Length: 380
Image (tube, rainbow, N blue to C red; front, side, top):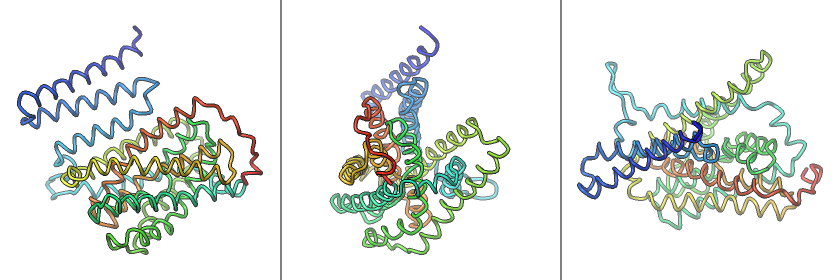
């Protein structure tokens, strides 16, 4: 057996043994030795994530498994992600959330160029439909689900918040894997992000104002600082570094890794801060995240179908609508709404959308685009 095949098997076996150890401990002592149980579970999740990362077929699930590993660690030992005691005083780790999101957005901006924004002039109809669906389907669905499940006010506001955010960067990768239009996906993400300083606070004011006080201007300014400014600096860096041939594939991969590590850490911090609330509403939030995401895919696809867009564009719109910027929702929840409970929905939605997006993209990738007969002129 080659090394490339044996390593994933080795880590998969180690994962199975660690999970078996956790099961045996629960059977014999009810899991009373929390530190030992945490070691079994977190170690098992970590080995499973490594196995997925080493296997080409399952690599798309590795990120979500790493998120689950950090979530498990935060559930067992929340103190690890809450505060650091230093000789200068106590530092709250939640203060790192916004800077980390700014780093992620800078990385996003560094992979964009002005053409990604001006491309809307070539296909205004497709981009317009995509952005319109993004800021109608997802906020309204979030509001409906929050009302249906009767969540506590802050948690309900968080469900609306994740639906009110623009498309996530992961949508561009999923569009590629699903035989969608990657250039169009990038443009939709860029445009929905560009209008989010106005549309996100507006949606929150209209749909979440009944749960928690929403200050429109405060949220608008926060989005400009946290999302738009870093993207602009990233665009500038892209231009400057490209001119000097410094922004190549290796740099882009590095930025991607930094973004994934940052997201894992942010979710761990949020989980640690809202551990008790999560244990109460966690299962319901998982159901809501799955439903919210699925409705975004379905309505995004079929609305694009009924507006006459071709199959490639329909797939792109569906993915763009279904996948949200969870990092932005987390940052706004903690920094603007001042509520870690409001960040719970985005902490659950984020990992799930990567799993569901990978599954949907793999399913579509195995099916050729049969009716891609519409031209760009038709879409425009």
